[in-house]
Length: 452
Image 1 (cartoon, rainbow, N blue to C red):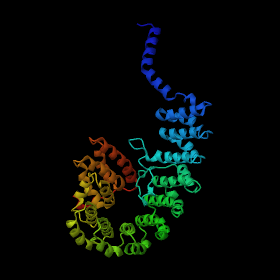
Image 2: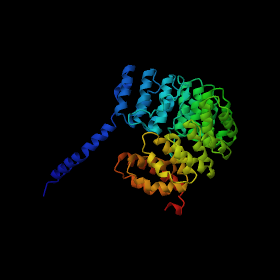
Image 3: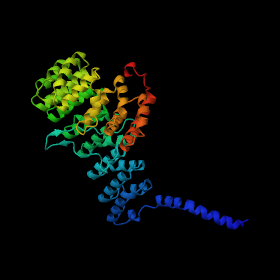
Image 4: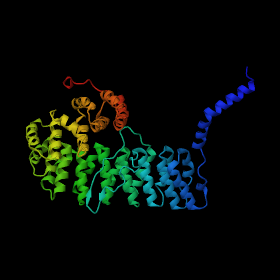
């Protein structure tokens, strides 16, 4: 029998072997912030803050937050950059403080990092192109972006409030523009009244960003408040307003949009006004869509086809079938297949699904399928394609279901969450989170017999 002291020593030794690495790791994770943060030299403080961008943890945030009002702008800038890199909920309050910084570049960075906390980063570490200017004065053309957070993500009200405050501060115009863009990314419904006001801004770019954000949020009730912008003297604002009121289904805008299309001074006005009409899909616009279906302009043909599909007039099926049979360009051909499917013909559903895997226009097809699969009879027909041999098709279908799926989508998504391709499994898990939340609120109805 071993001596009790010997047994104690052995147990202590085993415990050190077992717990030692764990305790060391814990001590490391809770290590004190770099002493340089308290240096009297501002260069040392800035360097210490930037060094934490590579290995900082949420436990470092209090020490960084203590410098958010540092007298040196370079230190504050480094702190804001690092708070964004740490990407922790603890960073939100100091970043909100930084949205009031005297240095406008620091305000911009704070706004970016607040939005970035919810929207995430690209694989390259950048912010998915969100903060590249979407309005190019050199080209004179506004390109809308569609980046937004996933459905169901809850954004802290204090973050929305900080961005609204930045939006409404017209004295700091660049932060105001970025806040307008960020509110759209965060799908900030509470900011809609402020965005409507901002859409009427005398600053063209700010107005465009507000319109694009309203387009993402899709609060239908705001549409009538934007119809007057169809008379804007700024062409880019008029063009964006035409698309926005269309997506918001503003029936009152139909007469004005039809006039703009028929009397359009140039191609952009004709194209965007017809696009607005196509999004609304009013039956009164069917004659315009039918005539435009045979335009020499392929973009006009594509938009006209979309409009016919949304208008729901099954009598248009003959024209669409004739048009698709003779169409050589991919853009209008895809739109015609979308329209035929929207009117109840399933002949081209397989072609649309296969198009998800195309490097060119795959995202357009995805948008079509998201819209189409809001109809139950289309949704259930997508499930057999979840085992498609093309991994890009499987991945894109997961995204479609994230936006349009219901409780019946859970089982096929669970299967793809075990897919051999990591990007497919990852997208399936992302979609599952959203669909499960939606399914709790809205259980799926029984599948129609025609689906079998």
